[in-house]
Image 1 (spheres, rainbow, N blue to C red):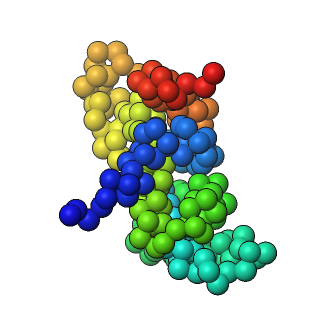
Image 2: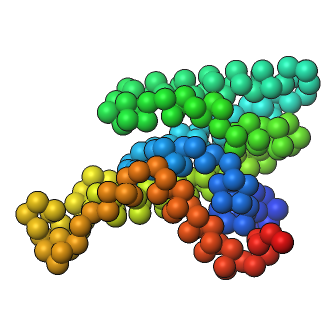
Length: 214
């Protein structure tokens, strides 16, 4: 028998496509607009949310029978705030420049609708292992969209990926720039993230007609 049952596997796989937090549930849009101008920032934000949501779901699940219903939101906020502070301090210690770039957006993980939504909808009603899988799955679905958006925005807006020049040198006019290509500065603006997400949503619904709302 494998480590994951078919039911458990769906907790991870469904948020990657047909139940994606951003493109289907329309949650966590703010960070997708704000920090995806660079692929590196997108990856770090994705990993940060995965740590916070995965661990947070487990903690909430373990405490679900002892947290009074009247203060459950306060308890959830305290737990997620503690986890975000830990993530923020780790970033400052090992990736200070990137931490400054993400700045306030790491702190805003505390109010990310995806995290509070999974606490309420899943972790409070399920055991730790399934809650962990749900957290990892939803964070992976969220991170996948951030990485796709960050990939195209940095590539088309700056001609780089993870800071490396992949289209050539725009000053020396090498690579694609020698053929007359120019970086699209609009891709670095936040509204372009919304357009890229819109294209992803269109592709997703074109592939799966069941996602189209009547």
